[in-house]
Image (cartoon, rainbow over all chains, first blue to last red; front, side, top):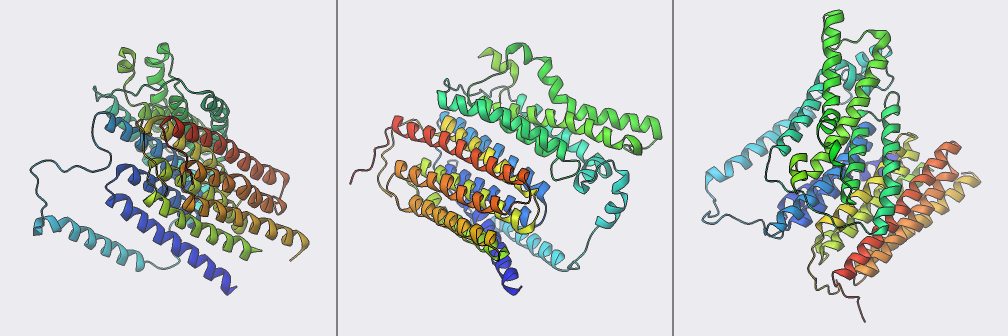
Amino acid sequence: MEEMTLLQEIFDGLLGLGLLWLAWRSLACTDMFKAIVLFIAFGLLMALAWLRLEAPDVALAEAAIGAGVTGALLLSALAGLTSTGASRHEVEQPEGVEKQTGTLHRLPILLLMLTAALLGYAVLSLPSHDPGLSAEVAENLASSGVSNPVTAVLLNFRGYDTMLEMAVLLMALLGVWSLACVESQRDSSADPILDMLTRLLVPLLILVAAYLLWVGAHAPGGAFQAGSVLGAAGVLLILAGWRLPSRLTGWPLRLVVLSGPAAFVAIALITILIGGRLLEYPTEHAGTLILIIETMATLSIGVTLAALFLGSSPEHEEKQ
Amino acid sequence: MEMVYMSLALFLLLNLGAGMWRVLRGPAEVDRMLAAQLFGTIAVAVILLLAQFTGNAALRDVALLFALLAAVTAVAFARRSWMQQKEDHGSN
Amino acid sequence: MGLIDYLSTILLIAGGIFFLAGTVGLLRFPDVYTRLHALTKADNVGLGLVVAGLVVQAESWAAAGKLVLIWLLVLLAGASISYLIGSGALQRGIRLWKK
């Protein structure tokens, strides 16, 4: 029906324009708090855009990370910034820096516009219905151990990339922990309503994380999505004033944070020893191996995200 | 029936756009945060409509996630980011 | 369109009206507390009616259950956040609007 396509086009067009406008306003805003809220709205619209592009796995990840954990992280960072005396309303210019309007100042803008134009040309000159590698993926799906093509690509066909991504997340945490002067914020004791909300939401979040982990084998879901939901549960706990008991902040915490990348690397080494090729799972065990990797990854991503939100390293936390 | 889903989704998206005005204007930070909460609820409704429209039930999981996580951002605001000093909050 | 479709359409449109009310309230009301009030209308009734309209069309009991669960979660989150923001606003001395 003609009206249907028209409605969809209007919807998609509005979504696209909204995304562009939000990106511009969020970056151009001088009030930091306003910029953060616009950024959260941007994440929301981005998730809708992924849905319209028929990528529910990415939409799940965007919803969990972009609209949830990142929003909380930015708000907390702003609070930490302003508690040290910086103003949250104006992005301050350092003294002595005049506004530069010469050609050197214009060069990055020109480069960006050129890159955008080239990208636009490249995208527009692609064949309009290029299936990419989806035919090959569909052919080999049966031997991959799962029936969700996205999970198959992430955990099996391109498992190498995912393994490196997990290492990147670990390194981000190490970077934050190595900033010795980061002080975590003291939260006052939670009032009863927040307490009740936390007690209700956190078990639910854990359950949803487990559900996403399990369902990722045959429907949109998977380790990153489940891990970020777990991370959101951790963020909620931290905000309600809960902290890990000190006997767990030493090596048990580090063990959990390492378990994701370590499991991946261990399985990679095993596959080299068995068959001689990196991350080539034996077909009959592929499903089980993927499940093991995903479970470890979920735990580790969740704990890493919560630790990133907390900010200070465990030793520093104990000293306070 | 598809028409109803899609046109309501479009209508809700326009509502979301209108709510942006409160983010830009809202004299206090809490007003901007309220607008963000509204966006979250509108997004849940839009996703549920899209799920019915495309027939893809997996989209409902995304709506579930949105419903859960909208709370986390708001709690982060209420507990960490809200400025402590007294604000003079006039109308509009 | 069958009877179910008509019922569904009515519920959905009613839900849309409440969403509109929520947005207009957010834009037009004079202070935080009244805007919070408008917001909860969109959350509770607006989303509730939309969910009701979709439950009628749901393909299975499990799907209907998931829809209702989503609505209940939004209710829970909305109620708690409204309390937190409302009491926080009072503590920070935000005055109620007086005509």
